[in-house]
Length: 603
Image (cartoon, rainbow, N blue to C red; front, side, top):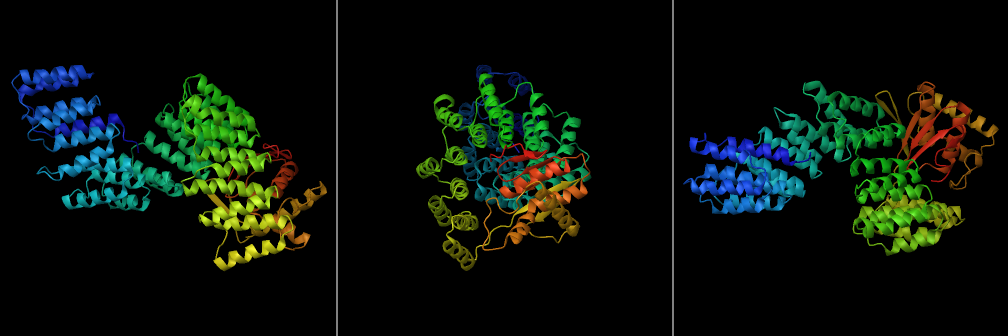
């Protein structure tokens, strides 16, 4: 949860109110400081402070002056005054620490806390909360744990403000279990605590648990969700592709009057886009009077996922014309759009303009988009050359780069490139199972059966197991998951019966099952067709056709790339049953209707 300046200043105000009751001589000073809107006016009050006969040893008045400078983000002046105070108290220390947090200098706030522990001044709950927030910003988990232990020793282990900050800190530092441990230990929770816990789950890829906590909040608390909480809930729905829950959250946004919040609207745009409802995403975006870079980026990424490369370019150009500066994620979105639409020249133009025109330094993720762009139009030699020239520090980014090249080299029968890409992935211990399988398939597709069998044997000897393909559909508020070849689910026999019926009707239309780019090891044609017909996305589709009433679009999510054969099958089935299907695979969306796909068979 973001630590904003306004929230921080209210926090400082509550700190000052803890001081002893104001002497009458101070009331005028305090009132003058409240009316100060610039550093000159605060300095003027500062001067009158001395002229009135008050000294720097008057800690009460000095704290209000420190706070006045902090409120205007003049932290150096606040610190100078602090250094001149003969006996700064806990309010003095905490106010300055909070000022550094707001000024984006969390490291200095943490350093001040260490210095404070060397004095006779004891931290209070606001002090601990402030320094925990500094750890959140710095993602300093170990320092955060030490402060947590110190808080327990000082008796703040059950304090509402401290615990809320700890939940937030553990979430920011990707220790979700630590956040949940603090959350569960609390006797009382406020809206900040609930929001921090939901955000911790949502930001760490545990969307189902985020939604579960949100349901718990709604059942236990009568307070309405705030914009921060709703943004996190919608983000969780987005990552899971849960359209039903996302729509319910959208309703809560409308009821709470949060439609004008930038963060909320951008998450709504993103959620509908990732749930296969780009039309809704577009409608929400078009109602935003002055979209920010966050909202523009969300819609550009959404358009790119649907293969609407020209629209993503138009949106980018509109954004720049309106004076909104793109960021690194915006460029990933527009490059992705160019890649999925075959717009190589346009994509290269955007890459070359990043630093020169927009001041954004290209990173490995941007070059990976260009590698993907080359691969999709069959320019593998150029993709290979670029991949070898990219300096990658993050193993995950390296895996994405070489995984992209590996998949493309397999599709285009370039075993030479596939071998290098696989070697790099295996050596870096990234996507090892996928590397073995893809290289094996590449070799088999070019008739190098001995090498293919050898790679499969190496996998078994090394104990490497490939993650199985799975797909899922959401029906009402339930999610049904399907795995390739597994019929042990409710209505499994009905699903198999329907698939066989559809297979027969497709063949009548000229469909050749099990023959489009899939690799099998010396199995008969009939067996090939049986294997392909039980891919997870087909099981999910057949189940949805049985359960979901006609007239409702079927949405299928898949954890891997959709294979060519299933893609052809979905096109044929959409024409046979006269229904719309939307599939979200690991790369993009496919909208099947009347025997064709929105991707135009380019993906």
